[in-house]
Image (tube, rainbow, N blue to C red):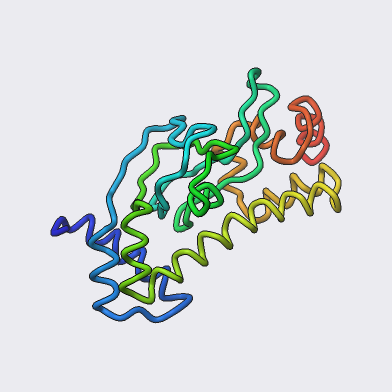
Length: 199
């Protein structure tokens, strides 16, 4: 990994991780040598329903949607999004080695640094950093699911929409409205009315 662009990207990952815990140079060397750069085009479903998740990835740039597919696109359930400098994985499938009950799809051209299940097991055995990666990924998936469940129970559709706009303005600008309407639990028509009311 001598490419300067990759070195810059790895520095971003290390800086992010060191917000949570210090990392020794030897641990970082072992961990980073097992990261695989991956470029995925916009609107690519890179984990299919009933496939076993085999990787954990760090989003260098781009956005990913987590959703439950249906035979009709209009009935799909979007339950989460992940953005730049976040980990993404169907982590429940990754941990249990069982088929995933949802899919992962890029919403923009997306750059990832990916680690396989087998390589992460090596990292667990050899370094302290592996436990940090596992914890951050598990926490991310838990927060995605619990936050949506809580907002559906506690907030109005308008409040849910405004919360998205408050914390993720890039989401409003770049994510199709049908995914946002699914995420906040309303029809696209209802979302259009909310948007008109707000503006």
